[in-house]
Length: 303
Length: 295
Image (cartoon, rainbow over all chains, first blue to last red; front, side, top):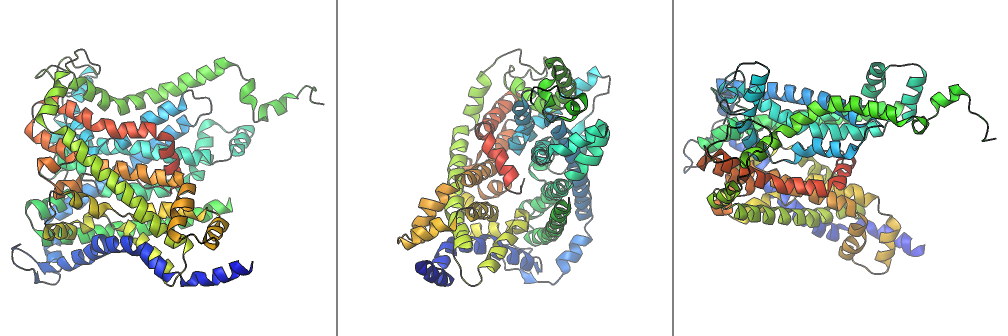
């Protein structure tokens, strides 16, 4: 006991060990997170037309230039539409699937669950390749299938109106297994008594779903909304592989806009400005998420 | 007492009444659920079937027959795909990067998590918050300066370029710390009183007692690296240094109309992460549920 007392006092002088233990991670974070963040903000305030010459300070002119660039607003619009549609659809579908998979009488549950989750662990580039072939206007299976239903052939990825929805289907396909798994965990945490008493009170399936399931998983829903928004907002891989932002910027997500500006046209200053805007948007969503989840957990505690 | 017949009203509310129901009703419920699940599962599975079928078709005859199941089994597509691009090399590169990143995230992350859990010094909690704050920085926001750092180090097309910027992850530290908190302090105190160093306490006591979370970090990090595309696209464009995802994209550029080869290559690229998921499924899903989740 005496020993422990001394030991606990000594604890406060763990600084040398703590420093050694934190040194590698601190170095890496400093070089590859904190410094780049400051450097990106700094670069966004500089003009850097000629990459061999040093950048010249230019105040907010990059921002003014960006805000008067119609492609920037196009990319924001495309990204927001993508984010909203993919987030809402994958969450709705995921919840319904989770409720079905959570049915206590369902046979081979884990088989269905694994199957639904496969897209989430499939590499995006590979999935995008398959999508290109699946939606090929001449021999893709989608047009074949639509032929069975007497729907005329579409050109999908080269159609200005259909290219973004086509990419959205890939986003939803990849996302829905994830939301389903998370909802399954949330559903399993709901005490069975709630459902038992609902049944005793004569509640139907719809009523049970909307009055018990949906409200009880709402903290999970809020978390999935923010996570889904962050994930979808950064959509890049599939767009770059499938359309490179075309046709005529119909699928130009902000990530692809950043990539083409900075690494195809080598306008690093413009790229840095876009990245600062992305940082602001993502940070806002994350801070909202933290507040929401705090709110959500206190809701849960009052039940 | 327990031999007494149960009144019907009790029977209805009895929590285990499912055991009393006939199997036929279960089958009916299952059929109803299947009616709902099968269309969804078809949408999920169709891309895989189309990919597999296309990879087994004869060259140049990708459109026919338009079925979702293979009617021909032309495995030469796989040979051609392996000849047309160094997929073995892509595999090797990706595996080297992934394994190194996994190890470093566990070692460096474990050390950091240990310091944040068991060591006490001024500024510890502020530093932890600073670490966590990196979770809200999207990679896109910092990619240009990182690209410039790698350029100035002349690291393009090296393993360092692919590995070093990924070696530490705040989410891994958070997960490990959550597991470390559950380790009873008495164990650590006892070992310390016996003269064990913090380093050996970490590796002999804390890590072995947190294996589930360590494994979760390993699986997430491995799949993250396997699915990473943006960074390898910028850091390595030499064919010898490409990873699977960028290699596949380059293959697409070269064999744009050779769909059968391309789909064979896609199958090759898709198998490892799916295998890892299927093998570690339980760990993966419980990890997702435990971790507070990140996509």
